Image (cartoon, rainbow, N blue to C red; front, side):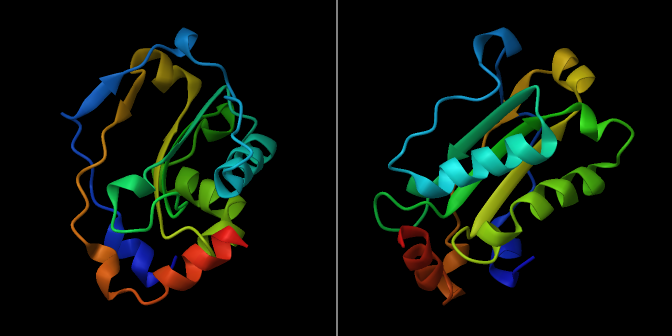
Length: 150
């Protein structure tokens, strides 16, 4: 994990949740071709984790980056491959699937990794906290944004 990414990921309060029933979403929403990083994230997580439910949210607009950036994401992955794994192991699977993006164009990634049973009993997506400007000291952000547009 890159040092800049660690600074931007903050603990999420369990009190700030949005309830989202599984039936309301398809396992893979149609990707927008004008968002190549989002499409790559969706494709790689789908291929590697075979999720029952997947949400990819570009939260770049909530941060101090140029309009249209693809640098800050939140993913919700519901997969039976997470059965029996600790949370850190689930996050490592997601990070491994997205290692290319995390080392180039993605500055921050918030992960919710649930089993189908967990999702069934608590179908919620945590709300992201407001940006605290953690990327201001990370001089690699500009390079990552440029890499994401190429």
